[in-house]
Structures are given as C-alpha cells and as structure tokens.
Length: 483
Ligand code: AHR
Image (cartoon, rainbow, N blue to C red; front, side, top):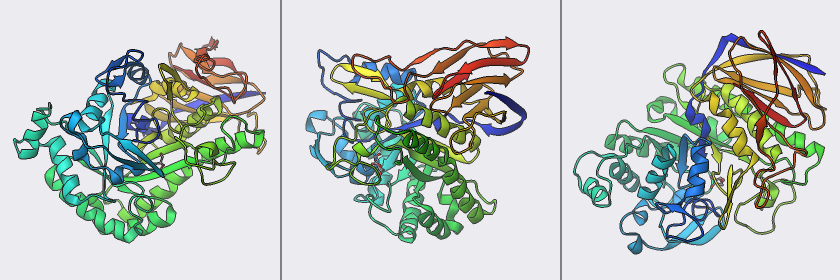
C-alpha cells in the first residue's frame, strides 16, 4: 500500500515557537537530584558546576529551549529562600511531592537552576508557591531574580554571585491548585490568582503570568471568573498525561493503538480549552495555552488510574520505548497544528521521571527513543508549519490513516503508526531537502538501557528523488524526518 503526502505551502498554521519544545524538571524521584544535580564532586561522574556533564551535553544536543522548575506538586511546598546562599548553611527540608516525603538539602536552588538553564540554553520558567506560600514570598522571588536596582533583595542576589538580573519571564502561580496545590475551587483560585498576578506584575511588568487550569469544568468556571480580568493572564496552563496504554513494555496491540490515540487526542483538549478562552475574551486578548506537563504515565509508575498500577509510590521512573517516541511524534503533529493557540508545551519530565528523554543510573547515561524523536524535530523550531494532505492510505484497525505527518519550512516528519505493516511514501515537496533520517526498531517495545544505549536510535533513511517527488519506505512503527 502506498501513501501520498502533499504539503500545502499556501496554508500556513503559523510559527512553531521553541517554547512548544519545553521540558519540566521537578524535585521528584531522581529527576532534579541525581539525574541533573549531584552537587559535590564524585570521581566516577564528571560534573559541571554540580550538574552531570553527560546530561548537559545530551540536553544541549536535543535541544532544550525551555525548562520549568521546581514543580509540579513540589512547587506549592517550596520556599525559594531555602535554596539561596551558602550551600553548607541551607536548611534540609522535607521534599514533598506526589506522596513522597524525602530529605531535600536544597543544594539545587535558584542560582544553580538558572545557571543550568544558561548551560543548556533553556529559557527558565519558575513555578511559584501558592499552596503554602504567600503573595509577598512570590513577589520577593520575582524581585530577587529580576530587579536591576540595588534593593536589599537585589544586593542579596549580587552577594550570592549574580550581579545582573536574570530577567526570568515566565512565572506560574502555583501548580494543579485544584488538587495538590491547595485544593481550591475554580472561583476561589481565580480570585486569589488575580491578587498574585497583580502584585507580581507591580514588581516586574514585563513578566508573563501562568494561570492554573485543569479539566473542562474547572476551566469553564475559572475562565468565567477571569472574564473581565484577562489582562492578568498570559498563559492558561493545562496538563495531559496519557494513561490508557497498558504496561510500559508488555503491551498488547490494542494497548499500543490506545496510547497513540490518546496522544493524538491531546489536540482536542487544546481546541476545547481554546474555545473557552476565545468565548471569554471575544477578541479582546489572546491568552496562550500552556500545556505545561504532558506525556505518557505508565501504570507501573503510579498508584492510581487504569492498568496494573503499583501498590506503593515509587520514584516515578518508567520504561521509555519506541512506542512512547511514536506517541510523542503524534502529539507534536497536533502541537504544530495548534501553534497559534499553544504558547508552550513541556514534556514531563526531563530526566529519569515519567516520559523522560534522558535516563541515568550511577555513572551511566542513555537517551530514550523519545530523545531521538525530539532531536529529529529540531528542524521545526522557529519554522512555519503548513497543512499536509494525505491520500491512498494504509489504515489502522479503526479505519484511520496509519501515516500522518507534520510539515514546516524546516522539513517534514512522517509517522507510520501501523504496528505491523510498512508503507511506501510518495512525498511531493518542491523544497531542496536532501537529508533523511528514520527512527525505528524491530519491536515497538524496544528501548535503550545500560549496555544497550543505542538499540533504538536514528539512522539515515534511503530516499529516491525525482523532481518534486521523494519516495521512501517507512517500516512499521517508525518515524522519519526529511529536511
Ligand atoms: O509530573 C508529576 C506530577 O504530575 C506533577 O508534580 C504534578 O503537577 C502532576 O500531577
């Protein structure tokens, strides 16, 4: 069966902001501590400023344009002053997030995090503490980071080693405040949010404020409360985890397709949220949708939801297979289509936790298939996204097209979602694209790991070119980029 893809260069969706390729690092499990930050020198693990050099190098090459920190649920327990000043004098606190209570020595604080962002060229996004903090505490954090005046906080920042302001733009008012972030109802949160947003913007009017959304009911009610105060909101945050794909590695054909379908339907959630925002604003203000946590959350890494879940809270680590990478590619197609509506999207989480592109164990570091799929998408950053037209399709069991694609001025990424059948793709593109790579493996459940770090990785793809027609074979469960 062959499939034709045409790129409609006259029908642009918009520009793919690098912020759509953001990431999320929480003090949870082995993400921030151990995965990113080790702190003191260890002979077996090379460090740069306390962070793992191998992880820094991998993230730089991914790339990582944006990084949200320190949570997640952790954010609403975090007091930023605990993480500044002499590391030897920082208080050891209970690290609280998602049912975990661990010792947190605050070795990784504001200065370390923002230095790390510089090292990997990521724009920082700080999630403030609304659940157990105060407006004053969050406003002080903004001042500490951003003032260029020699105020007490400005001087304190300088004496801690940072004389010039960082100018952090993105500030979240809490996280999942409908649940772990304070158990608010939507109207109370919206009212409280307005106070935070106003006071923070008095300190620095150039910052962008992120409002916490949730499901459609919460979103409808909280947006209604914000209808006449939309000026306080730059981004409306939603989270979407895919939880219906069965076990991370031992999944059935039905599980495989269920996960890809769930990834595909992430776009619907964005569209539904957009309708609510547009209805409230009536063109008065464009509020971006920040999908600031997304990805697959397998049952073995949670104690709730569908599937054969864990009996106890673990470290939130899970397998990362080729199937997860394909789901990522499918979701990214939707992000590109919604690039005018989505202002940000952060994969959860950046290392060792949940849908991580990078994994570590002792002195070993490896990249998951999702890492490679993100790297293949680097050509799309800052590019113009265009509509594609697909015909002569190989079908999935539910009758939908097995082949899907996203095209930008940087190249085209094509996914063959079929678990068992390969396809011949005829791509019509009057562009001078002459490189092609493919990510695939014998089984969709294949993954990388210690001793087999490169089992799943990108390889050159052979294409045949005749004028504007580019023809190539796409194996089952694979994804390719022509650029
Ligand atoms: O990413 C793990 C957790 O998932 C985050 O802390 C929380 O925001 C979400 O529920």
